[in-house]
Image (cartoon, rainbow, N blue to C red):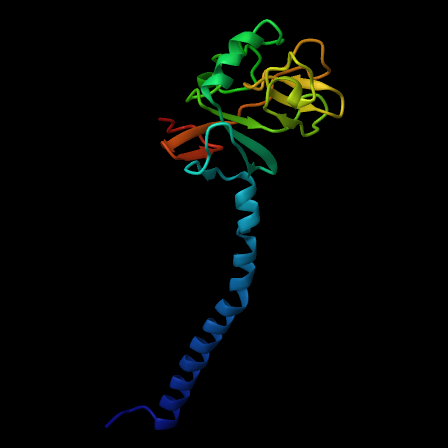
Length: 198
């Protein structure tokens, strides 16, 4: 026969059950606090690398992606566009990309990893305006017969060639920025991370 009173046994069971329910309730009450402390999807996206699909980007086309709240242009340059880069070398302020406006792997005439793909932050280095795309050469661009194609900032008249190099004699002090990036495959670009660059 048990030495403990059945009423005491019931009381002990009731105390244990109440404690368990209380613990579960406390966890349920504080879990929203911990969830709210985690960064939101928007906050993660603001600084996280951005993956871009290049399968539909045909030669001569430009698409815009958003990275860290900035527009990033991806231009699929044609052979003709690439040929124009040599023509503008004497007209631009920093033809060899000596100013640190690009990662080391983009310090070349094309300012890119793969010559046909140009990746630029679409913000003018003068006062932060957004230049317009004037990719077509000549009179069709509205910038004169000698225009080789590139980007034009209508706010203060800064001009950039098809590699984002700034022309001499304009207000912008430096080339357009090339963000860190890498190619995950022939058709996938990752903007914002170049650690495992291929």
